[in-house]
Length: 116
Length: 117
Image (tube, rainbow over all chains, first blue to last red; front, side, top):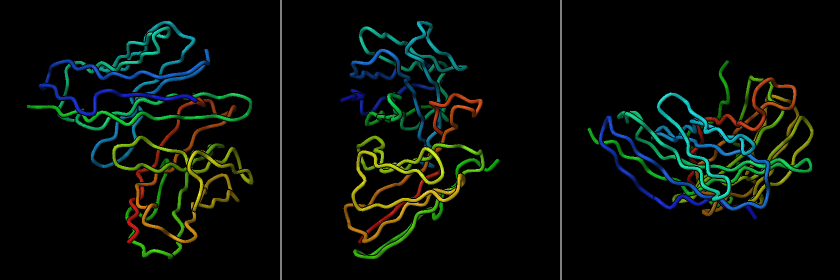
């Protein structure tokens, strides 16, 4: 069964600094997708970034980038120039579509605090 | 587009009561799903639908029913609420193969907070 592990329940960063959130996953598949979702206090789930497993190049979205290590099954999120609005829960998620069924598995989340 | 909308935002129920959580999307997405989020947990899939008239169970389906009579709506019914169903419920949707968007990316509603006493 696929699992997603976020080993850091909480992280903090100073405004304008860089922080990296960790995520590891377990799968025997080779073709899948990985996501980072942000959940601010409003509880809305907001897509931050996605990565296709078949792509070697790490995804980047403005101040957000990932370090995707397929062999190590690691998918960390780097937030550069942290802003107060980045404070939120961050969830790593794994997606697999196979044989007409699909699965989206979430980690337990990392709470990010941004200090002014 | 309003995206994915959910009503109500917050609801209190007594044990044994029934209710329906509403979910609607105006993006013509084929795929819709319901998740629950409990403290210290990620989201877990309750039920999903790959199109009108087609539904299937997810990871934690017990105590919930769904139907999909239209592309836009995907209500979640609690038949007899229990305290264990106290949670935050999220509805999500994504396009199908012809959607023109990454079909693997799901779009979430704002959530419904449910408290069962």
